[in-house]
Image (cartoon, rainbow, N blue to C red):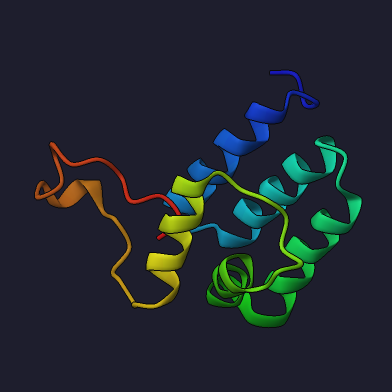
Length: 105
């Protein structure tokens, strides 16, 4: 995969999130924002995670006007998961066989 292809980092961000590797997920998201040309936005993404962990990142990305732009569906998922605590998606339980994964959860 081309490391400068913006969608590569978007997909990696989701994969890392599903694995529970939130630091790598946020870093991939920051890299995606950087490639899009928003250096300040990438700094914001990294600092929000450094200051508040995963929940801090979600909270800042949905409520802070300085946050870089994300697609409305992504922002809605981030917001929903920043206001409630949920169990991490575990496909091995069998109960989620036909469900879609809960990105940014």
